[in-house]
Length: 106
Image (cartoon, rainbow, N blue to C red; front, side, top):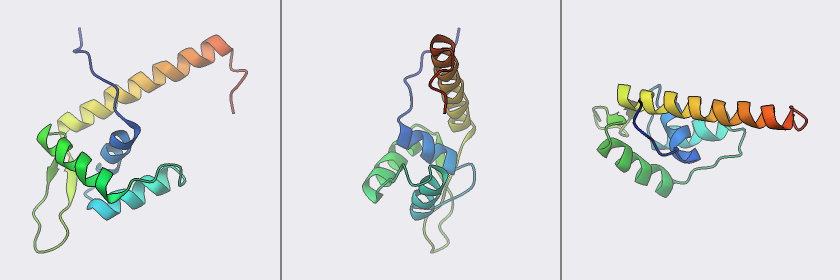
């Protein structure tokens, strides 16, 4: 049986998605805003606090700086967390449609 995992926050979920390609903090903020059509706007404090936690959990790693802004990229463990969250969200969506018979579907 798979180990129980807490749901990811929306911000962490989007940060992890954004790091399937190397990005620095500002690039993460731009990507998340574009991907969510402006619905999710992450500020620098949120981004850098989350990055610190995600590095500690080994879900992302820092790439070499070369005197530029530090970039981050998702690890295999981070990808497993995203896949688990996608499955959880699919289940929520599927069961919601099942119960409501799709009546509220956009």
